[in-house]
Image 1 (cartoon, rainbow, N blue to C red):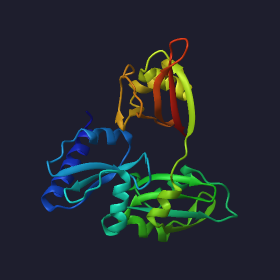
Image 2: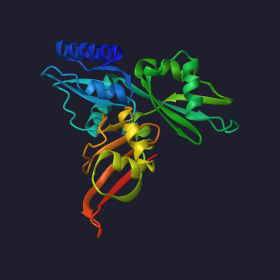
Image 3: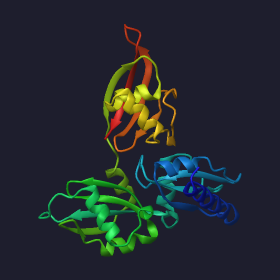
Image 4: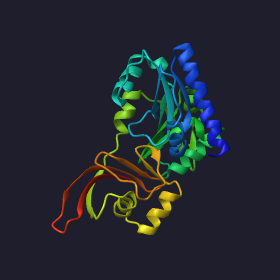
Length: 263
């Protein structure tokens, strides 16, 4: 465990104690997938529940949210419903950015660079969902007004930024996946990665052992880990998949794996 990981654990523990002692929602800064995996191992006090929340469905970058007993949100939709009723308790906001129609196409890097140019640290921003006409950015609520007021340029583009209505932003950010299928001899993680992302077995093993692959939001460095229906697998910089079904067998005795793939 790195010194950075130990510091993160200490910060999460402090937030959990604060939640327990003050009976209030607390949260971390935005975590990447590795940090989220580290946070998964932090033991919570008995009256505190930790969930990961990124403002968008299936967000890659999330905050660790510590919930006291009175917040009865057992699912992502229920949590969105709670914040819809109690908006002041929501630690996150969504910035909706509209690009001037005369501006050139802008990329994720352009928008991220514009935020960095405002002095916004990466840990204060979550997923950036780029569209043809602009983007949506998950941010900590406390900096949302500053960004909305000052984010006017990205690359060679002119922007208009506003704080979006959370329900509308989340509805627009729902990702649509592509169904695919393939066969494997066994449900080992490296075999599934190889076929789902069209890489060699060696590259799949190397990626797993390098900490680039996450199963159900936890970093997994074991190529032989067994994968089951319902598992979510993220391959950093490649995309993510949901294993929909792996219960059928082909005439040649191979397992038929049905997945939904997200870019």
